[in-house]
Length: 281
Image (cartoon, rainbow, N blue to C red; front, side, top):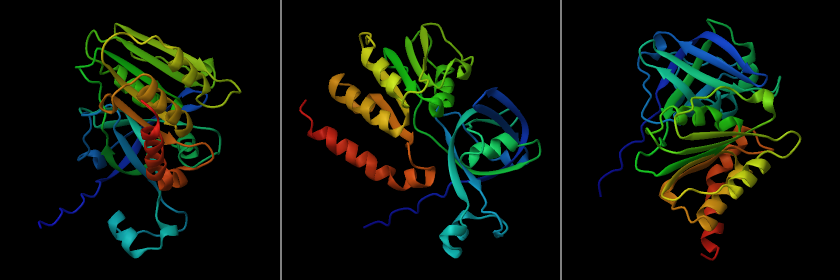
């Protein structure tokens, strides 16, 4: 039997903050650049993501920085903390990468870093990965998500096939969190304000109430894992959307930080798929 090829290690990049912008009360844009992005490439997908690396305070890492070496030689509690973020934009000409951060004061790890970031600050990250881009073969497109999916939804809107009808449903805290988005002809962008409600409740209700146009849909549904689970069931079982017509996954989960969510995500997804396979057609 032929040996399985070694898994390719994600490429490490070192970037420097070029500028920052407060887009809304709870979203900060960071643009990074520098010679450390000379080998970075993105653009095939609209949901490209990168793994930001945040060193543990007080820990000295080997140089050159090597995640494989760190994982093999250092205890797990000294590994850099990883946080996953979508590539909002990649300017290949100017070699500048744009990342949008949802921030809630000093809560979390990446948000506070983004709030405090200043030009010249260093950012280490791995990637990119990605899997979705709007299909030109679809008759129409559905984009649904919360704030965490907003950068990917915005990138998808900018790459929609000409003339394709689009329904984009985006749930945010309130009207102050809305922001200008590319709106190609034939697109309908609906902002949903949750207020004090549970994340995803208004979004699930709105997708359920949506009159689906005729034809083949290509759907992108991402955000908090709880509502993603509900919409996966709705789209697969009630709307009978084929699996290959869906890009659907939980970016995060209420009550868990990213470390906890990533550790349980595969099991969670397998459980969801198993539950839905048992449902009557």
